[in-house]
Image 1 (spheres, rainbow, N blue to C red):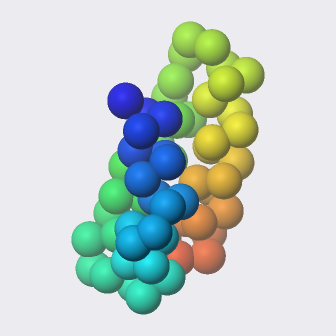
Image 2 (spheres, one colour):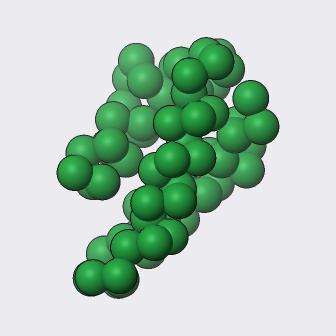
Length: 63
Protein backbone atom coordinates (compact mmCIF):
# COMPACT_ATOMS: atom_id res chain seq x y z
CA UNK A 1 0.00 0.00 0.00
CA UNK A 2 2.73 2.48 0.92
CA UNK A 3 4.69 1.64 -2.22
CA UNK A 4 1.59 2.34 -4.32
CA UNK A 5 1.13 5.71 -2.62
CA UNK A 6 4.80 6.59 -3.11
CA UNK A 7 4.70 5.62 -6.77
CA UNK A 8 1.55 7.69 -7.19
CA UNK A 9 3.39 10.74 -5.91
CA UNK A 10 6.30 10.40 -8.29
CA UNK A 11 4.30 9.75 -11.44
CA UNK A 12 2.45 12.23 -13.57
CA UNK A 13 -0.03 13.87 -13.04
CA UNK A 14 0.22 13.52 -9.25
CA UNK A 15 3.77 14.86 -9.13
CA UNK A 16 2.46 17.89 -11.02
CA UNK A 17 -0.07 18.41 -8.23
CA UNK A 18 2.74 18.42 -5.69
CA UNK A 19 4.84 20.81 -7.74
CA UNK A 20 1.83 23.05 -8.42
CA UNK A 21 1.13 23.08 -4.68
CA UNK A 22 -2.34 21.59 -4.89
CA UNK A 23 -3.70 22.14 -1.36
CA UNK A 24 -4.25 18.40 -0.81
CA UNK A 25 -0.76 17.38 -1.96
CA UNK A 26 1.26 18.53 1.10
CA UNK A 27 -1.05 16.66 3.46
CA UNK A 28 -0.70 13.51 1.36
CA UNK A 29 3.08 13.91 1.37
CA UNK A 30 3.23 14.33 5.13
CA UNK A 31 0.95 11.33 5.72
CA UNK A 32 3.07 9.06 3.53
CA UNK A 33 6.27 10.42 5.09
CA UNK A 34 4.96 9.60 8.56
CA UNK A 35 3.79 6.13 7.52
CA UNK A 36 7.19 5.34 6.02
CA UNK A 37 9.00 6.58 9.13
CA UNK A 38 6.78 4.36 11.26
CA UNK A 39 7.29 1.29 9.06
CA UNK A 40 8.78 -1.43 11.25
CA UNK A 41 8.99 -4.38 8.87
CA UNK A 42 11.44 -4.48 6.00
CA UNK A 43 13.15 -1.23 6.99
CA UNK A 44 15.60 -1.42 4.08
CA UNK A 45 12.80 -1.38 1.53
CA UNK A 46 11.03 1.49 3.31
CA UNK A 47 14.18 3.61 3.47
CA UNK A 48 14.48 4.15 -0.30
CA UNK A 49 10.97 5.53 -0.91
CA UNK A 50 11.14 7.39 2.40
CA UNK A 51 14.23 9.25 1.21
CA UNK A 52 12.40 10.37 -1.91
CA UNK A 53 9.21 11.32 -0.05
CA UNK A 54 11.20 13.12 2.65
CA UNK A 55 12.87 15.25 -0.05
CA UNK A 56 9.45 16.09 -1.52
CA UNK A 57 8.13 16.99 1.95
CA UNK A 58 11.13 19.24 2.50
CA UNK A 59 10.64 20.96 -0.86
CA UNK A 60 6.83 21.10 -1.06
CA UNK A 61 5.36 19.91 2.22
CA UNK A 62 4.77 23.25 3.86
CA UNK A 63 1.63 23.81 1.82
